Length: 102
Image 1: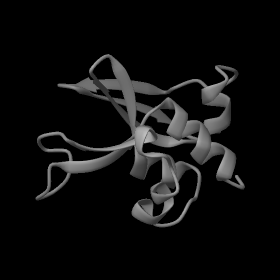
Image 2 (image 1 turned 90 degrees about the vertical axis):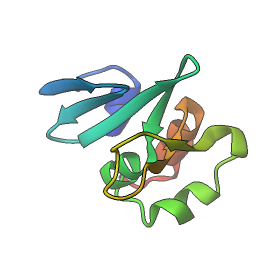
Image 3 (image 1 turned 45 degrees about the horizontal axis):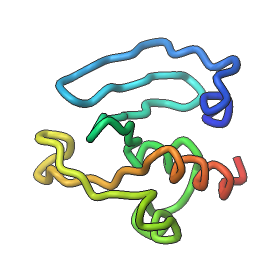
Image 4 (image 1 turned 45 degrees about the vertical axis):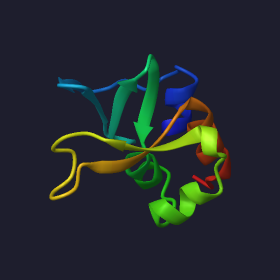
């Protein structure tokens, strides 16, 4: 579960893939979680976090986060036809986890 990932307990990743600036963590419980480092800070792709936590529509979900907890970043080739994607920092990740019922 994603909460275990945060506390570094029993989550083991079956595969970690690093492609350019994107690192993908794969796990049966969490699915795929993409991360990217930007200005020395790890950002988590919001769509992956929302999917793992079974939260609703990503844009609406991250609206409740503080401005310093989220970002719209550009990563070439991350999405089909659009290089912009929502990401959250560690504080935003914690807030999403705490708001989840999973």
